[in-house]
Image (tube, rainbow, N blue to C red; front, side, top):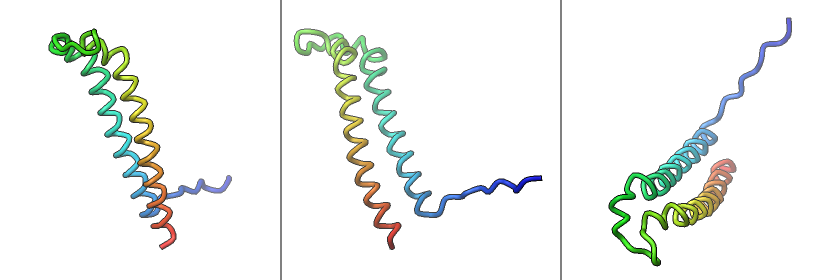
Length: 94
């Protein structure tokens, strides 16, 4: 028989980091869902009444707005994770 597998558990600082990361990802996914599906599909009827750059707002959101929001979400994630990484490094060295 071989050795039993060792299970590595996370310490308190790693758990803190992971929970913050998951919370951020969840928030960004909800925003992405609301803009992509909500703005382009679910709320299309009321947004069709709003002119925006020569087209209806729902069309613009579906074709370009959701892509721009997605890029902003990626940028936001990178900035927030850089900040979180620095906070984690400070906690780790305490």
